[in-house]
Length: 453
Image 1 (cartoon, rainbow, N blue to C red):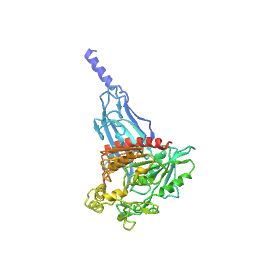
Image 2: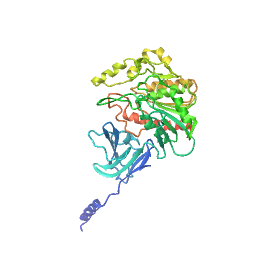
Image 3: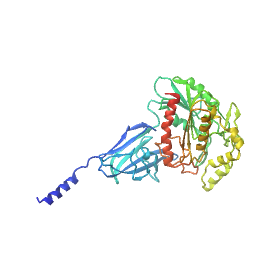
Image 4: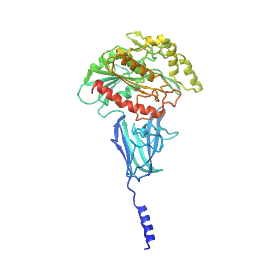
């Protein structure tokens, strides 16, 4: 055989040989409690190959499951590897090296069907060469650890009590949600925090009427106040007494975790209740605000919170109704605007309504967003931290200048829809995800240091 023909034959033969199989690994997978780190990597690729990683999942929404998807294109290194933790994509749904990038950057698929993910929290990860699939892995983000048991205490409507396995006496947390009301925070946050080794009582305290495309809907929990007016702080003392009666709970180590209005609740209560041993206030307020709601007379002239039957001093809004009136013409709603105006117009009432955070002996953990469009959580977190620093009190304050109001997550769920409706939370998807991803492990470290496990 002439030499040139031999070379050509060898070339054809080499093309027909199977390529080394590219592998997609997910560690520790295939199941982790949501918020625990995952590490994605590709091995066995041709050096310099452009490979696409695609993530898909289905998320429950009104009207049925909603499909989400993200993707990113990577170039394999000289060893044929892609390390998603350390390597930035050359194009795709996100821009920077980020282990969580494919997860938080998932966006709704317009008109798309939900992916073939049969279990809640399941993410389908695909490795592609162009449109050609090379490998697929599935990972499930669990809402709670396998040993966590969740019950519904009859004493508190809508509450959830989540406890991990084992006979040891554990510290406890009380979870307070925000102005969304109902049982959402109790159902989601209590099992997740219990997975970290705490006995957790998710405590609803307010349940407003809802709304659907067909019109108003009744409150989820009609036994609770339907307006955010004169919510009694002493409800936490009732929760403390209940926790003290539960086997396996160390009632000398109880902390409170609150988000938004729940953070306002937590700080106001802790300034009056020395038994609270740790406070986590996510997107907090440093003052008590005006109440609202259609279920109480003159709600706009009353306080959000009360202590032992007496309404607390409060800061009024300015232009609250006007802010919502624009929604009829499709104008965005930024609740921060009437709050900022009210604060500026009533300095004496701000001083009277200020939460006395310097009276909280327990350590305090704060997270605020500089682009928060619900209220100025960054400015108020800084104010809380400054007052406590003057008093020599332990405080962790994390402020993220480009993040918004939705900072109670862990950074592993989509952050792309927070501002898609008329109600604006502020922030950007990447900034919100980065803030969540950094604050979540800092929160867990704070709780370990403050309460133990």
